[in-house]
Length: 60
Image (cartoon, rainbow, N blue to C red):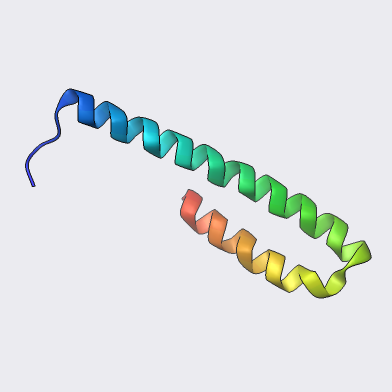
């Protein structure tokens, strides 16, 4: 595969930025869900924690 054109590189940068923003948002959502689930649905916490861990890995 050859080098990207300036336009292609800009498109890739935009996609990565949007993807990163989505993962950052998901981290915040899962964190809030875990906080609430600890009080009302403790059985859900392990699954939510696992999903949070995946999003943190994706974000890095």
